[in-house]
Image 1 (cartoon, rainbow, N blue to C red):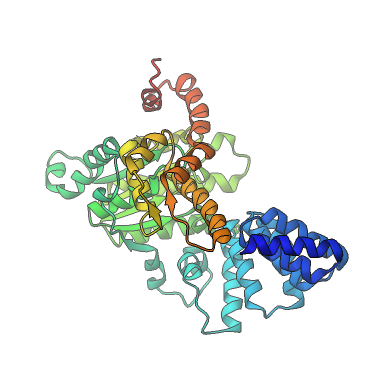
Image 2 (cartoon, helix red, strand yellow):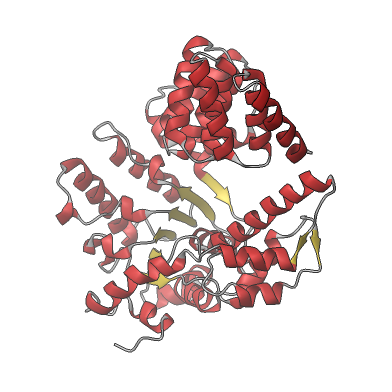
Length: 438
């Protein structure tokens, strides 16, 4: 449908090249079939003709967002909101852009302005992501302990829900789960229960998922913390935020704290020029050092793609003394990821086993990208035929050839560290995975 309309609009524009209405309609048609670059070009042409065309700028902001040009989208939105500060759709898009740029504090402010305009407004995504954090709580004199508890979750995911990864699950079971399930045995030998575990490996390979499954296995409370929940521009607030997260966990043991991208929080102090960064690391180390007493029954899981950037002090016994390599999903895991990701989608004779074999070295995120590419192709076909075109083996295998596994670039860097900066044997698992003998 859209393809035919696009042809008609292009033909009409040959006779009326400056027609803004036609150009705007053409831009929207391009956007509907995900040809965002063509849509952007049409909108920029409109603004060349009429620099103040409000509707074109509004559409351009959306098109920029769809192309992940979040900063460009925000620049356009700032001008539009200045002219029409009460338009909720503009504020929604502004909020979404800020979240993509990890500007959570600003996003919270925008979300608050939306609620002031419409007190009954609801948005599940914003409600989930912009929950009360220690950052906002520290600045709210009327906040209660219930605000801190909003960090707490109960994980319903267990190891049975995680396809493959048997070596990782066995190691976590031995080092984490069994001590928490059989505390009397470990206490008899004077072994502490809890501690710090560092999960490292290529991006998109399930480090967060395995952390949630770990919490589910021991029926523990689960606190998932992003760097934005901790770091604050004001001196001293980051340390306070970090302490509050640990205190919440201590009051709700057994508890698993999961900190993603921990390298951003625990970078090597020797490479830091600012005092503020060092004090945050010192605070973190102080919280971890409490694991011999008040942190009994508390497990801290950190995830990083670059463990070589972590401060060596994090690996001292009593801190992150257990380090587990999370490799790309094996064939069984890839089959399971395809199966779960294709669930409830229109498919036709799909063989997950063949897909798993054909996607060697792909991360979970890569597999989802494969399916997204296949879906986009089928959407374009559906627009042309007017029918719902199902995903087929042919379309998925074609997408696998188009998507390059993101893990290969990671292993190129990791191999150098494993070969030349591995005196302690920390990265031996990488060499084993790559079948390299040092």
